[in-house]
Structure formats: C-alpha cells, structure tokens
Amino acid sequence: MSASNAISPGGLFRGAPAYQARTPWGAGTGLLAAAAIVGMSFLGAALLPPLLGLGDAPTGLPGPGSGAERPVGDMRVVAVWQALIVALTLCASSLFGGRARDVLALRAAPAGWRTYAGALLAMVVLQLLLAGVQHSLLRHDMLTDLRPFVDLVRGPDWVLTAAIVAIGAPLSEELLFRGFLLAALTGSRLSFWGAALVSTLLWVGLHAGYSTVGLAEVFAIGLFLSWLLWRTGSLRVAIFCHGLYNALILLALRFVDLPASG
Image 1 (cartoon, helix red, strand yellow):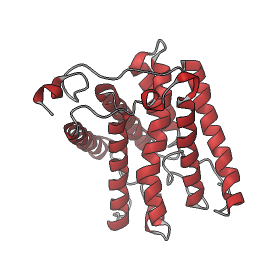
Image 2 (image 1 turned 120 degrees about the horizontal axis):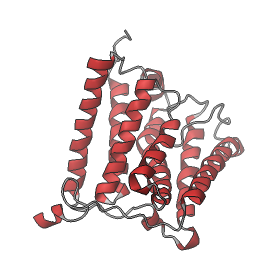
Image 3 (image 1 turned 60 degrees about the vertical axis):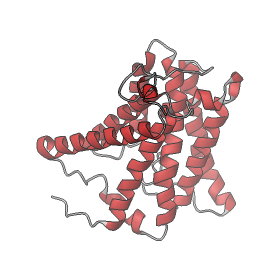
C-alpha cells in the first residue's frame, strides 16, 4: 500500500471522509424496519429456544448485542437473539434492490492494517480520556457497571459468554445501528452526523441498566465508532474496534479481581 493511499478519501486522519450511504431505505421506513427487526428477534428469542431445547425464554429484554448487559436464564437465548438480529438485518439490507455489502458499508478498509492500527490507537486515547474524566472529575466508581458481569464470565458458560460479548455484540449492534439504520437516516435532513446522533442514542437505550456515567461513556463510544465509519467508509473497522474493546473487558473481568466498591 503506497503512502499516497493513506491520504486519499477514507484515510483515518487525513483526506476526505469516505462514507457514502448506499441504501434503498428512507429514514422513516428504515426506523420502522429496525424496530421490526428488534421486535421479531425478541419474539424469536422468546419462542425458539424452548422449542429447540436450548433453554427457557428470557425474563427480560436483552440488548441485541451485549449478551451480558442483563442477566437471563440461559445465555443461549441471548445467542439466538443475536443471530436473529444479524440474519434479519442482512435480509432487510437485500430488499428493494439493495446489496447488503453496500447498504451495511462492509467494504474493505482503506490503507489496510494501517487503518486498523490507527483506529486502535484512537480508541485507546479515547478510553484514557474517559477514564480520566470519570476518575478525576466525576468521582465515579468506574467498575460499577462491570461488577454484575463477573459471575457470567467466570461461570460454566464463559466460552459462550465470550462469543456473545466479543463476536455477537459487535456484529449484531454494528450491523443494525451503524450499518442499516445509520445509512437510512443519513439520506434525510439529518445528514450523517444527525443520523449518527439518533442511531447512537437508540443504541444507548439498549444499555438502560447502566449508571448515568456508564451511559455517557457508551454514548461517547458510539459516536467514536460512527466517526470511524465516517472517515473510512467501512463498517468493518467499527466492528473490529467494538469487538476488541468488548474482548479486553471480558479478559479483565475473567482474570483480574476487581477492587471493592467504594
């Protein structure tokens, strides 16, 4: 990859943003379709696992990507939820003449590994800034929102939990919110950043059990992932960073004892 490609459209820090919405869905129909995908996936997650002998139906609505955000009777139910989100999003992206690869911006990242390395560096800087704000200004226990998940990642189903958190979450959430929905909203008066704001707020709604500070952090991360998509034109970069972020949290929870709350 030549150096000139690093400053062509789609470069992470230089050059013009590369994102282009390529979807047959309008803003209104896209919102309705996204709501239908969430509703149908929840219904499927409630009905299919008992029929297939995979466990009981969920007692509460799990986030489509997080898996561990709300305890459920059986993590396999959450895996079904995630699989349905992915499948229905791909199907919706292929309707009305659309191509899933274009609608969901699943094209290759420009500049190859350099883009991923730059995105990883930017994510580390963002996390350091957020941690600094929480620790020095808000006096907030940064581990509050993580403590309930320790038993999940250290329990007998930890491998399934890892798959749900590090694979299912990035795929289902990014495909639906920053892939399908953001593209549909971008074609309206909102433009890209208005669409990013709306889709991020809806994504934050999936984390309703978090503290106020935790929700603010999720919101910041959502806008960061939207920025990655805007700069590179590739949802693959956002999926990569989302997955790595979740995987690192999971590893920390599994192998590092959290200090007592205070």
